Image (cartoon, rainbow, N blue to C red; front, side):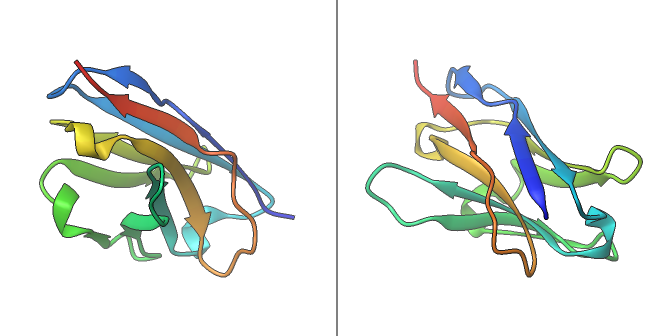
Length: 113
């Protein structure tokens, strides 16, 4: 059974930074594509970043140059470094393993002055 625990969210001013973490249990994350998704109130969940098994990455256009996805295989944890945050980045952020049917509880990110 795969389980994910997201953390690192919080309240930050525009232009600030946060680093989110996703600790996984029940699966070796380096063997799968890992994704970060986000969902804002009234909107559908959307992907924002992914990291492939070969460590190559992809990002949605709106976060390119500002967000960086990475992983620490020793800790079995995926990270999302978020810089130059904007109010439109406010959402609940989730991590997801390719092929998994489960989601974590997510972590709230609020960007506001």
